[in-house]
Image (cartoon, rainbow, N blue to C red; front, side, top):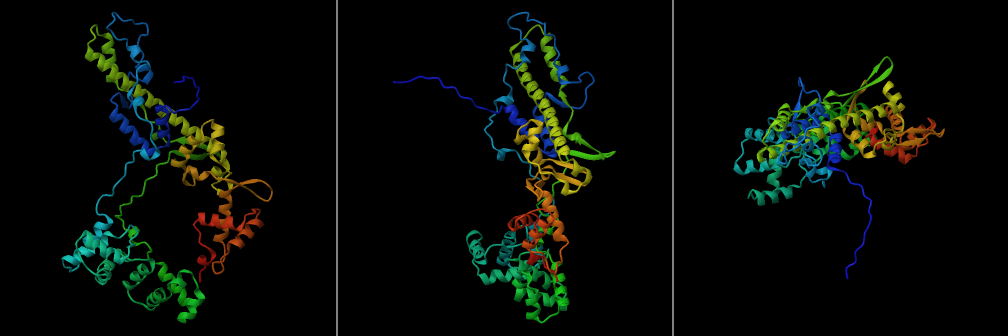
Length: 483
């Protein structure tokens, strides 16, 4: 027997408009401009620039509210401009993830890295099979310039994909005689050791370079671990000679592929969303004008509605046209309002961050950065943490000290020896200064660094120092040692 009952359930759901607004907020300036261009192309009711008789969107919809229908077949324009109809954007599916965001991937023009390598193969005398093997080896080179796969795997792939049956010796021979002589030097190496040796072999021979090759070939591990005393003893060389070897090897390129100017990777141009200047000793925040374009409703669409309202005969085709126009006007109105709300959200969020980190923006000293988390800003501006996160993760601000990613101003707190909350950024900056001032012949261990920080009033454990050092991309003491 079926049982019927009533259940009350309280739930929160984001409307399609709110979802679209969140997506607009997280877009950086350049992507935001592309989004506006896309919307203008898709919505003919949206236009840019200024119009003589149409100052705002609201003015464009200023019709006589007292007008009445002359008969039952006539459509009330004011009713059509109300929110009873569902515009296109409200019918879109909203069960998306962040991975569904459209991404415009730029491509490099001209010759790519691998195309350049294949073009150079034409300068070698190779038979058909050798050329196929050489091209296959070039195609196996990664963006750093290395071949990471085993030669035996390459031999198998040549047999299965290119129908070329060869041996490991033959592949290695072509690798050394052909690929290793391509430009940039060092390309096609199978590891760092081989990459450095290839570059040294292609240079003019000197005593130091010959010694450098010998050290890399027979004592590579001692060299990378900076066991200098063992190297001096093994090769019977002076400290000065070892220093010259170190300088010679440091001039080599450990990633020859990344130095190629025509590589597929393109450096992204950063357009700051905000600008902070110091005027008369006070901070002045401005929002990039490209974040607030001037949009309005197309004059033609308004004329269409006026023409329909003034028409005495309302045909079915005219009614269908009004439905279409109404949807486009709703979409245009929402998009204009969303841009205004985006502009306000960005400015309010950044203004709060600027005042929270006032001392830093005045001086540029990272030691003046206060502990600040997303919740601190969200509580002050009365917005959700996710909104602050969207602003911080993708926006840049131009300051007198350079262009900074906003999320860099956020950090957790730790207590100093006086019980005061200090930013982890401040501790990292002091740690960085201490390491930069150390004696490179006797670099400080993490234990010694921990003691120095404690003396400066920051009781930090050794493992915490190690974590901060790794975040600063600083090597351990042994690898920081210099001759």
